[in-house]
Amino acid sequence: MVKETILIRKATMLDLDPIERLYDDVHSAEESGLLTIGWMRGVYPTRRSAEASIRRGDMFVLEDGEIRGAAIINQIQVDVYGSASWEHETEKVCVLHTLVISPRFGRRGYGKAFVRYYENWAKSHGLPELRMDTNARNTVARSMYQKMGYKEVEVVPTTFNGIAGVELVLLEKYMEL
Image 1 (cartoon, one colour):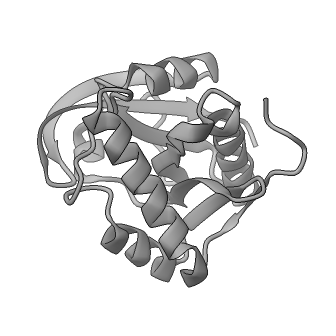
Image 2 (cartoon, rainbow, N blue to C red; image 1 turned 180 degrees about the vertical axis):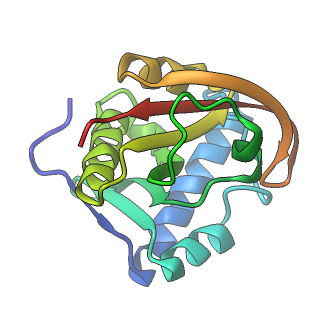
């Protein structure tokens, strides 16, 4: 279970190496069959994508003695969002991208803590419409998001972040501000 000592904060360039290690750990776990996320080493996510996000100022990290998770929070909607049948159409959208928790620390509540942080961040910025996506193969994330009140809007076949053949699950949740 998550301890009270966790901190979620904006990432800095000093966090780039630990974020890259998180990505490498996830890629290794997926390659060995321990995880099913749908990411590919050398394609996405990468050190380059993390660095770009840190430079934009939208990468966040979760610390609990060490960096155990990372995610991107912004208002950038990926292309396939444009044709989706969202229940709530608004310009006040916040998007969670590339949520990753170290496989060494999975199933301890860190993912839920990060999603709660995302929700609070969106609320504090006046953004009631929450959106995110995940690969249809990532059943663990889909289950967690559903339990947290996210609705699966649709599944879109696409090439996503350079990975062909992805069945991208689009999710949303609307919060009253």
